[in-house]
Image (tube, rainbow, N blue to C red; front, side, top):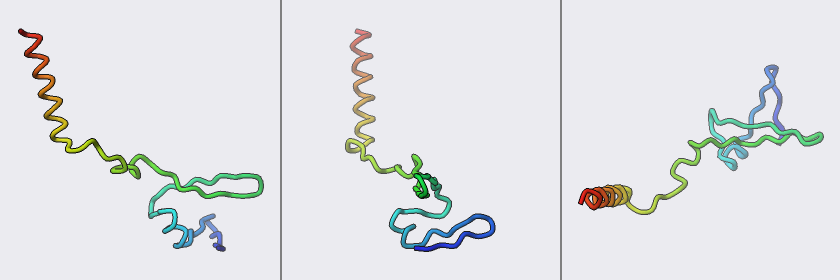
Length: 79
């Protein structure tokens, strides 16, 4: 695909490429040079990975289990 460089040095990334690589408004991209080629790479931030990892079940239950264990050990140490 061909895109024109503006007088400010800007180019438009075609919509098909933006959709394919998930590039949205205000996303960051990196330009990498390899020989006589320029490669545009989307830059992912931690925000992009939010929700990508699923926790081990119900977090409220996990918290309560941890609190119960700390309480049990405290009582045991005080006895």
